[in-house]
Structure formats: structure tokens, C-alpha cells
Image (cartoon, rainbow, N blue to C red; front, side):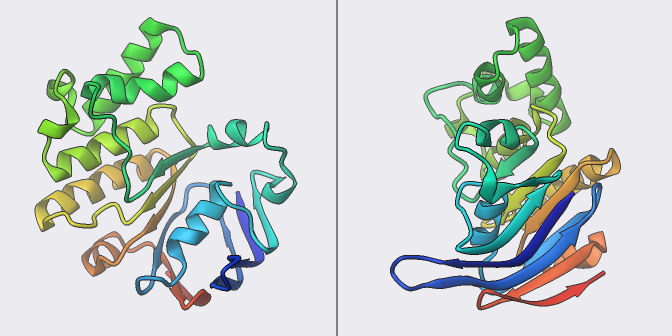
Length: 220
């Protein structure tokens, strides 16, 4: 499903964010990416989502080489992905429900079906009773669950989560992990960047370790 071959990313100011990174991820895997701050995790996730392009090497997702995609094709590729980044980009001038409806409006889903899907996504993350609330009224853990609901409402095959437990207490982080486990059990491919050792110990996933832009470990 996902194949990275000799991927490097160098920014114009001279920062070498990734160097010769290669791995393969099968459909349905749950993979954690770990490493110190600045190891290259966030850069790698931006490349996987085609937000940025590698300086060299190739990334293939579902048989498509991301470097060869036209700009017009990238939005269609991203429909395969649910993206959860540290900057959640929640819309605080809209309700919880409206935040989840936004991706469905972009793809033109009819209003009745969109509302049904959005409420189903909120139910999965335990926020259905908060659908009319403004995101500013939610706790940090609830805001992260809202970001997850928005990411999965389009039923993506691949979920990318960059430090989804950052700044959450242990209880909230544990709840987020259980949500991810539930998605994994129904066949969603999960790629999660995290510093949380409890997650890796309890979930027993495959772990890819990055260090200064290099892939230095790949273990189950």
C-alpha cells in the first residue's frame, strides 16, 4: 500500500530533514513512528500526504508515485487519507458538527447523507452529545477527538496522526489510543507519530525509529 524508497528531503535553507529513508507498509498495518523532536517524523508525514514533495527518492501509495502526480490529482489522492496534525485547524466560528461536515461539503456529499456520516463519526469518538457546542468549549482531549472525527468522516483507508497525544493527560491519551485501535480492527491502516512509550508498549505495533532524518530502527 505504501512504499518509500531512498526518500530524502532538503529544504532551501540547507536543513536536511530526511536522508535515504526506505520502508514498506502493508494495508491494515498499525505503525508507530518515533524519534526525538526534529527527527523528521512530521516532514515524513507531510511527504506521505503529498503536502510536500521529496528532494529525491520516491513514495508510492496504492500504486501511485506521488512525485508524478499533477496538482489536480492530489486532492483525489488525499481522499484516501485522514490527516491529524498537531495544529488541529479546528474552526472556532462553527459548531462541532459543522467542523466534521466540512470535508463532506468539499466532496459534494448530499446534505442528508453528510449529516448522517458526520453524526456517526462523532458517535465513534464519543462527542455526539456535543454536536452543537463550539470547539472552544471542549477540553483538549475532546478537541483532539473532534479532529479525529473530522479526519475519518470520509472513511479513509489510511490515517496519518502526527503526535495526536501531545499535551494530553494520561487518561485522554489512553482514550485516543482506544479510538485508534477500534479503527485498526476494522482494517484502517494507521501511521502514528508519537513520543508516548505507553502507547507503543500497550499497542504492540510495528515501530519505525527516526534519528536526525535517518531511519535507524524497524521492529515489531
